[in-house]
Length: 432
Image 1 (spheres, rainbow, N blue to C red):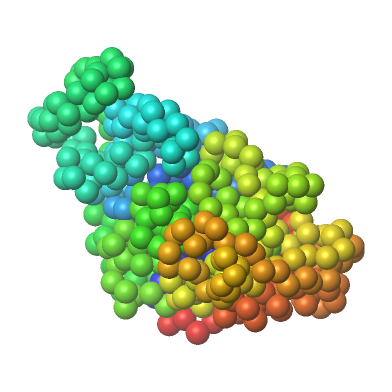
Image 2 (image 1 turned 45 degrees about the horizontal axis):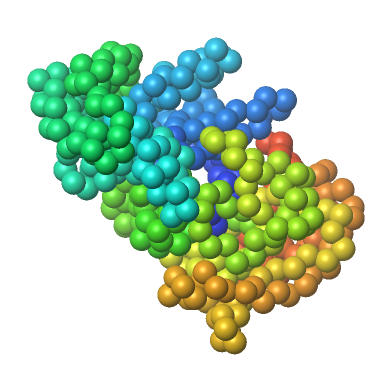
């Protein structure tokens, strides 16, 4: 041990890839335990930028074993494209391990995802259209296709035929689309089976044995707390558990294995897709955050909705996940602002909420209650100790820490790998 869970503490895009990369030299395994290629991690190493969608960001660390665990849904073509892209840049991908129990995304679910969103119109959820939700639905309905099925064509064909019996009825009679042939799906699924075969195995056994042997394992969540299917802003959420508890079911490890939970929190807030967002700014400040922070989706390229930091959701994330340490990212984006508002509560039709409202309607109608903090104008990208920061920047970090209920152990002051301030050892207190 130790076993560490890393989660996003907002609506995603907080910079989890950089946090994983920062821990890289201390890690033996990095495990993706939920989601699919509907989210992305951007990691900057020197003058090289890597955009990862399905692969764990630990694949960029040469001594780390990256794992795609059973809780992930896998688009095989995307996986191969990412592997080929990294190998072309000199990255060794041969260490990748893939759970035989992970579900694969069949082509009919990508089609259904896109046509369903168009059919919903103004009631759309804002999915990426990559088949993630329909594949998780198939998993719950016990009609999903797993990686291990690729190696028994008879079973695979039976599953595809059974699935298409229903899916084609939907496509033809509800959405007025063409039916999809069984052979088309079989060819799509089997195209890359041989390529990934050496990587497929019993990752639950491997991870538990690694922990028994004293390995350090990081469980890396896709998406983020407010997108968790149970604990997020439902129904505008993802289709899996992106909170720390999801690491246990999504990777096959017991809760007693977990030593630390690291939450990544951006110094302001962003969101992609539909759904409530109390601190959203639809003015010049929102445009400034988007432009200075380069807030465009790693996976979709969509412009992100931007707003001020919201410590109500920060406290909520700390509570739901049991966060022991926060990594605060993109503090440098706030440089140059005279005043920086921080949301410390909500007003809902005259009622004050200091914690997340349980009623989704209340959250949807919440007006932020702000506390204004002093800004700073000095360039902070060269700061490497907390004392290097301007006094106002230090106070901003300390106030967020005070309000969110867990220590801020790392502060990001730029996009580069070394543009961080380490205030505390994030593994301090973990069982060694």
